[in-house]
Amino acid sequence: MYSKDVIILRNYPLRKKSDVSFIQKTNSYHSSIRIQNAERSVNAKSLLAVLSMGLCAGIQVTLTAEGDDEQEAVETIAAWMQNAGADLNLYP
Image (cartoon, rainbow, N blue to C red; front, side, top):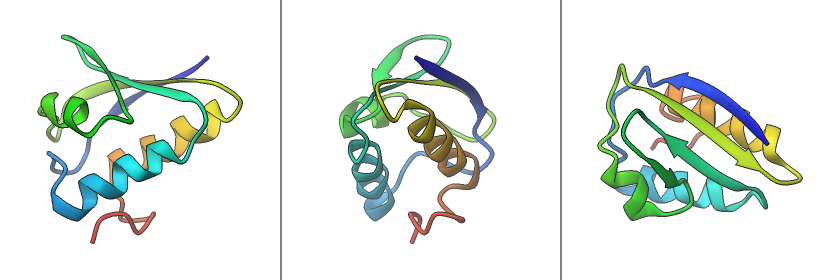
């Protein structure tokens, strides 16, 4: 299991094409991936679950993955959340 605390630096919630890109990215990993805030923990591979968290700039979340590609998954998704995909071409 690999975890990392992330402070979301750019605006959320996910929007239109970027929300689908985010979910496609999380689903490209074999590991199970969860996003947790102070109130709840959700499956990061579920669009409705992620959107239901109402994430916005300044919120801290914990990303956790478990599986053979857990570290790569967490680090890549953390970078996306902090940069809103700017460096990963996921935010059109």
